[in-house]
Image (cartoon, rainbow, N blue to C red; front, side):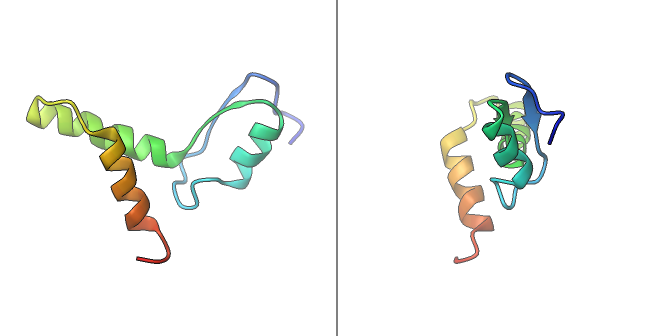
Length: 73
């Protein structure tokens, strides 16, 4: 898209597929990107930390989400 500029932050809330057309286009224009999967994990991590008073295991959470949304389980 013509409105994408070098250095912009582009965020797509869709988490499946993680690599959306918007994010692909943004990367092609040298934009910084954030996926919906990352938003999902970070929201869950914040809730986990507030309820448990422990640091959230982000890598474990990301892996679990990826397994959960994978077309082959």
